[in-house]
Image 1 (cartoon, rainbow, N blue to C red):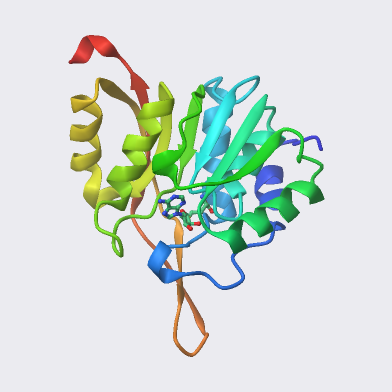
Image 2 (image 1 turned 180 degrees about the vertical axis):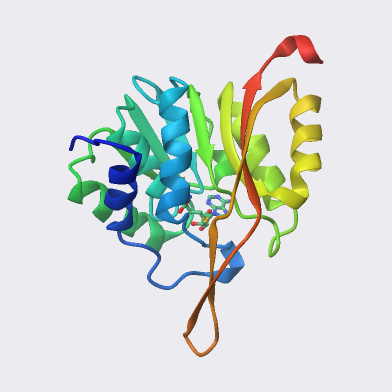
Length: 208
Ligand code: SAH
């Protein structure tokens, strides 16, 4: 499918299936479509999608990885540990005829070790599992020289220090206000926005 603009991308992504029963313990919050399209368009403009091999770590229902496939990636691995999310991601990919380019892989991100050009991830922020975001950053730099990662802005100093200690520079920080879906016990859905930042990390051995 031809993607005509960032707005068009957001519309396509908004039609994908989301988590049917989001698991709070795994911090299963899908990236809202505007926030995803905003990031994916920046990646595209910086030359980090077309012809690249990309890993979407903690892919959930596949919004970010699917977007990379739509925008011309050579290969995308959607790495996700939870069965239902993987099943939904597969359906989403089939609906857009992306099953050949985009491969869902059921695995813990800490065990995934295929080398890729770029990682994109919206990791658990670590509010439920302490340091979950750190485990994702470690997994990302293990396999890619370029990493796009979404974090709460309140943890920005941790992300900057982590990058520096690992020989990565932060080339871009994009503030954004993603929607955090809150599933309440009464099954009402409350929507609120949080202050977050998309970081772009690039390996730069000289900074150590
Ligand atoms: N990337 C998706 C989903 C983000 S929610 C999106 O942007 O919409 C984070 C996802 O990470 C959840 O689907 C959760 O099941 C998954 N996850 C959490 N810990 C994981 C781990 N250790 N390994 C693989 N996936 C994990």
